Amino acid sequence: MTFPVHRPRRLRQSPAVRRLMRETHLAPSQLVLPAFVREGIAEPVEISSMPGVRQHTLDSLRRAAVEAAEAGVGGIMLFGVPAVRDAVGSGADDPEGILNVAVSALASEVGDALVVQADLCLDEFTDHGHCGVLTPDGGVDNDATLERYAAMALAQARAGATLLGLSGMMDGQVAAVREALESEGFVDAIVMAYSAKYAGAFYGPFREAVDSQLKGDRRTYQMDPGNAREGVREAVIDVEEGADIVMVKPALPYLDVLADVRAAVDVPVWAYQVSGEYAMIEAASANGWIDRRGAIEESLLGIRRAGADAILTYWAVEAARWLR
Image 1: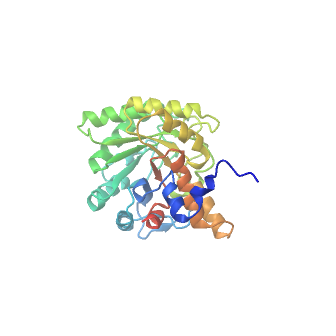
Image 2: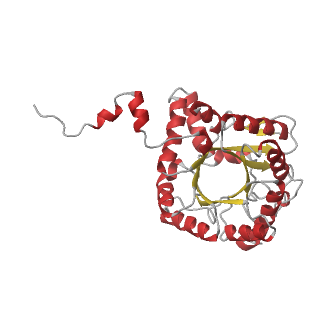
Image 3: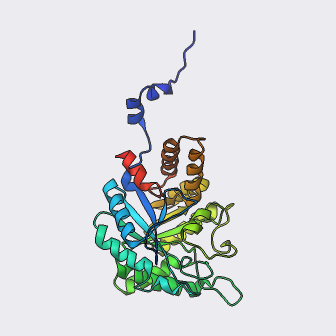
């Protein structure tokens, strides 16, 4: 009788052995909670396409942030939903705008326990829903948009944001924001660039969450889903311009890009488990088709295994509690 020369199953024989041999680990501090705060509402508003996620009032946002801190979550990324929008997104750099007010509130409430982060993009604040200023013919004016991003960066830094999430995919956005921050003495502000952000089908629920006014698409500035090498190039450029962290978004359909970016840069690499990824698992589990907790844990572990140092996920608090 012959015997196998190699017996890898020895390292899987019990929960204790499997735990000891595990190559990839997930910790609460590696999770970041995306949160929406909406101007002009008296009570939180549930988001129908994202069960369990809501648009917050300032008060409910404070409570959610405290809950996240108590669970050991690493940070909270804020998105503002203003009551009034205009063509240039004036509310984005208004000190009394909903996002900057929320940043200030959380910096005071949980700034010592969570990394308070602000989305730096105009799409929530424009009446056309694009991530930048438009040209007369309806295109996005890259360089005019950079001026708005610089102003937005200063407003967020003044409000107390520790980390600015540059999600607009404009060329030169990291350099423009870094220059503005340095010129005003905000040398410690962390810049996280959404470097490889793809134009795809997984953002639908998010657009409900921010009450997006978008008509058309963002394919002239977000990346083509067929391009992997370009995602690495974008990340390298952002690091050269001064990004402290780079992002791949979405996570699940672009794990190959995430792994390639991780291999190409020497700064932290994050990934965003976007609204569509969240909605798919919630919908499938609600129908009894998959094990909800198992699918959530496996999806997060897969993103970590591909190379993410931290993950933005709407399950951050729940998953953190499981992990503790």
